[in-house]
Length: 499
Image 1 (cartoon, rainbow, N blue to C red):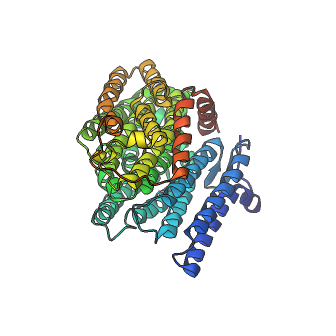
Image 2 (tube, helix red, strand yellow; image 1 turned 60 degrees about the horizontal axis):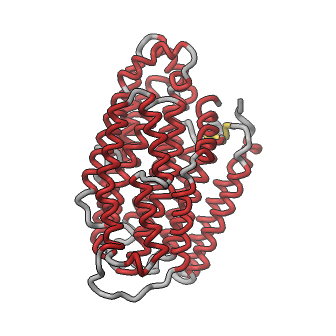
Image 3 (cartoon, rainbow, N blue to C red; image 1 turned 180 degrees about the vertical axis):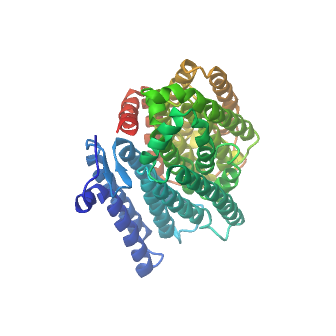
């Protein structure tokens, strides 16, 4: 089992964070010195430092878990999700270099904010200390608020930023109150040390006492995950920002928030989750207070996201509701409150990465071609742009959960685990909502291939974006055999629960 290490020895464990910090500082200085010029070189700088960060993280996959500075955990779980947010940020920055729908000025500021948000994500997924968790969440949140408002001359962008800040501040305040309650009950902000109090409460049959602070924490995480009823900001914000920024909010922000919530649950309730020790005897009382709530939120989020998406005509707004529905699917895995539930949730997040980033990249591609974010702007473009058109259909099939895509196998894995765990109603609801989603996802395929364009448009050549779409589409199909992803998920959950 890993332990704490000295201050100077700890520095080697935070080299990825230091590299990312150096990169965002250099990017900001370069922008201040050169002004809005040489965006290509600035993008190369940002992507280069992300590459270095990813390389440093990859070296840590085989390291034993350690606690750094008494607050940060370096383990397989944290490293895998740091690689997740690093890859997301790199893809989003690359997408942003191809965005023709917004002024090229201010690009470096966008990339600086993306790197800052990624740094906040690093802290978020790698800490068991609730104060550090809150700081990481706020770093990610403030950078995200700024990203939402960076196109301030756009009416939708300005409105989206205001809504995002207001809802975010409210959720942060509620979460901070939950943290204060946990501190008052346990006398510490370290979730690892809180376990002792959890064990005492469980031995006394008082696990329900932890329900309120856990629910308040869930409000903060629920905002980031855009689960019902904390999702109201998402459609307006996604519509008001550029497609790359919307992709970051839908994938990067959501992924690390889910990882942080997994760590909090796993740390506080490890005895129950592992299924060992005297805490198992009181698990029934805990389940009676929290697990039904997670199940209700999961079901409500699935239903709301999918039904609301049926009425949408704007592509980014449709994908916003789609991401809400998928948040409900992810929450179903957490509702199982066990090793298998955590594993299937992580696998689903990995598959979600390919299909959702791909969908937003496809939106960006076709907005560049048509100048419209409406589904009607896609009419007839599938045959003119075969790589992008076929890729977009693959992403829609994967999001629906149709074979032979990874979305099918990920949903099957999740449904099988939920059914075996006794969550029959939620399993059937997931299947029903997947059928419902077929109607709105394939409106996009219908527009691409079955409807005639109203006007002929010149083709805008973006080969690098086509290549990105192709690679993401290949990933959305190749991982129908999800065993490599499941192996990674199992290793990360072992570190999460047993170290």
